[in-house]
Image (cartoon, rainbow, N blue to C red; front, side, top):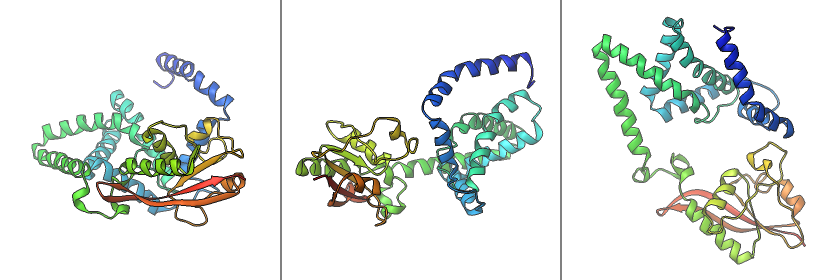
Length: 297
């Protein structure tokens, strides 16, 4: 099967389709390879940290619902063990196991984000449905288990769509990263007007992108200077700081050693804190931010 004419034709077609991607990477320093390296969490050396793997697996069970994720893993292992000769099963597992295997391997060193393995769920859900339909058909008692899995997932979905009534502290609210951005933008706009700022810089792509999205004029925003490929923002031209530049640097960092990066201090000889606030969502504090005014004399 691996070296059949059909597989060779498929491989040739795939190679032809990815030529533009390969050409673009050749011209742009293989930035996709750099991005994949960052996903590994490896900085100087690869270490074995079982706690990080457990953190990654816990995240998978948490975002998908524990029983449903258990059902997916059970189906994958059972099909791999008992029906690996079935070409349909091989095809579905070939889209699932390598993705999860790769991120589980990386997570031995550093736990990846919960959404990184999401593409594997496209086929994972398909073979899970087929597997458990067959199980329930042979053993009707498993209907209760399947029903419980859907019930838990439904409860989790309802709860996760509105966590306000739980009164969780900001750091524990799972929706914190998705809320408070309109208030955040209002603070940035007030600082822009008060200090006549003509440049907006965020310390992370989330702040930079949210400023561009929520501010009325949708300005072009930037990140501090960084090596090419360090983030998506390095793919586009950066800013030029001149004598008349008045920049606002927005950060969520609280570590004094990392609040204002050295790259910004090298560009601006005056960096002054002008706002310290918690973004609000329906009167609840979400995220702590700091706004600095950066100028050159």
